[in-house]
Every structure is written in structure tokens, then in C-alpha cells.
Image (cartoon, rainbow, N blue to C red; front, side, top):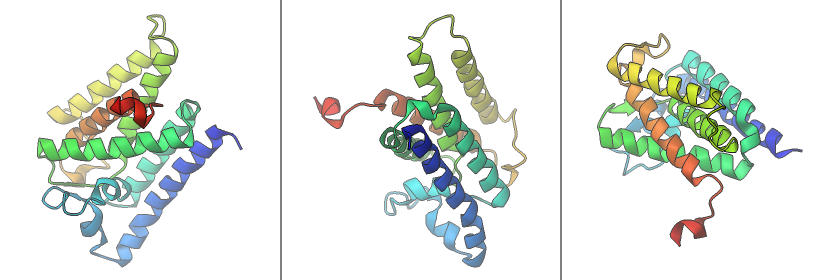
Length: 198
């Protein structure tokens, strides 16, 4: 089985889990409160660095994000091995959660969208770097620019999501934190731990 297919399978497994969780949450009412990002307890309950990204507000939120995660992965899986894809996912989750904590807003969040923003940015930067950042390759920088513009418009309140209306207006900051994680994941892509400490 090719590495690309294995990466897509990993993304699909995460997507299926994310879609299944809202049904399980309906059976266990306090489940979301135990696994969402909650600024006041994030350092005492570090699993929330990861679980906050897998849980969702409802099924629509979960399905939309799950589909987006799989689409981004299908388009860019050729840049990853299973190890580098999971490394990117973990780095983006941890950096995103830390940046949200540093910004101080929002107090709580759930969802894969920050991870998707970060993974898309990482993948676009990898795609562009494969072309040696050629000026003739205009598609990657254009999409990166549009992605950053979208997040800025969300932060200014000029762009709204019908899916996230119940999440408040702070999701632009969450997506910004995802982009920050994406930049760091791109810089760390395929680096060995030994080379980082040298």
C-alpha cells in the first residue's frame, strides 16, 4: 500500500471518529465539558490540547470539518509520510491550543477547523517550496493569501459562518492560531529531532 493511501486512511479514521463523537456526546451529556479546550484547566488537563480538536458542537459541525480534513489530505497527501503527517497534526494542535491560550480568547472551543487551516497552510507551503518558490507558480501564494485574508476577515467580524454561529465570534482567532501552527509544522517538516537540538 502506498504511503499516500496510508496518509489518506489516517485522515479518514480521524474524520470518522469526529463524526461519531457527537452521537456519543448525546448519550453522555458532560463529555464535551471534559474534553473541550477550556483555558482555566488546559495545563492541568493536557489531553485537551488534542481532544478539543476532535470533538465538535454538533453533527453538522463535525461532518463539515471531517469532509474538509479528508479533502485537504487527499489533495496534498503526496507531501507526507504517515509519520510526517501525524507530526504536522500534533504540532498544529499543540501550537494552536497554546496560541489560543496566549491570546486569551476564546475561553472554550472545539473542532477540527483550526487543524484544517494549519494543515492547508503547511501543505500549500510544501507545494510552493517544491517549485522553489518560483514566481511563475502563482496558485499556491494566491491560495495562501486568500486563506490569510479569510482569517483576518473572520477576526474583524466581516465574515461569518452559519455552522459556527453558536460558537460565538472568536473562531477567527482559533483559525489564526491554526495558521501559526501550520507555519511551525511547515518549518519542522521532515526535520529529525537530532538536527533541531544541534
